[in-house]
Image (cartoon, rainbow, N blue to C red; front, side, top):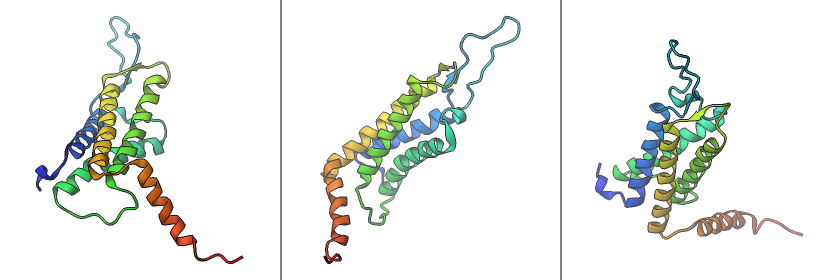
Length: 167
């Protein structure tokens, strides 16, 4: 495995993916606001952030974002080839990073219940921003953009339908 093969974009995206994983497993995303009663300890509903994202689908997306960001760097560093993808890997990482930023910002703006925002939520925001920015740097180094990738997908779908209709 040659980490030197990774560009700055892949390195940033992988670091962001690792931050997302760490923020989710180790740090509290939420805490109870000043409910401590003298003599009864400090209540803590934060814990690991397994309940931080609502619904199983959002949790799956969060893990997918982190794993794609880290996995894409590992595959490139290991000099393995991926099957042909309909869009570039940088586009996928950048788009998923943007989705991650949106998920975390929603939780920053609207925390569940009456809970305080914890340190892990801000670590997750930094991680998601790194994934999105790293993906965009990778897209730049690949010489592509979201518009170019959308055109490529459109051509791919139009090419299969253009000769089959008769009026």
